[in-house]
Amino acid sequence: MNNESKCKIVLDTNLFVAAYFNRGSSSAKIIEGCLQNKYEAVFSAQIVKEMFFILGNIKAKEDYIEKINKLLQNGIRVENPPKVKVVSEDPDDDKFIGCALKGKANYIITSDIHLLQVKEYKEIKICKPSQFLRTQITQI
Image (tube, rainbow, N blue to C red; front, top):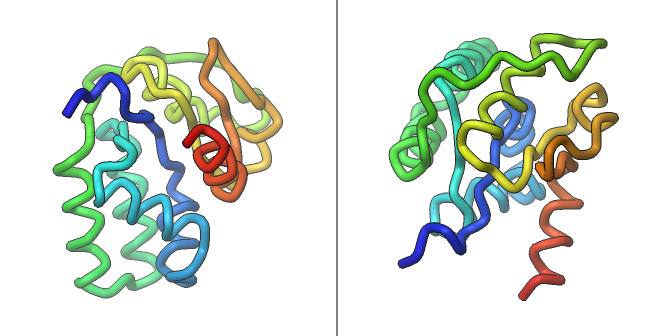
């Protein structure tokens, strides 16, 4: 399969939390899409560290952690993403943009208001999970 044709996405931590609590949500559908190789998840060590910290805080069950580990094994891990200063209201969110740049992602998918306000950065679209799924339906 040609990886270049697959949509590359950076997933914000809040997407994993939403998917855990609502298995029928857009967030859960995107995670399933990554597991089924419809989309390619792009991530960095910093994002993974934050994600597992949050999943630990919500006491996510082992089966869900295993699912996320499988998603990470199938994804693209970027090393040393560039440090960018884009999200002035919450500089911690810049890690998602840096990761997307280094991994040549098409989208950052998030429910974070500070990231959503950016809308697009260097041709990387930033949108909510439901918006992303709608764009995928229209591209089929």
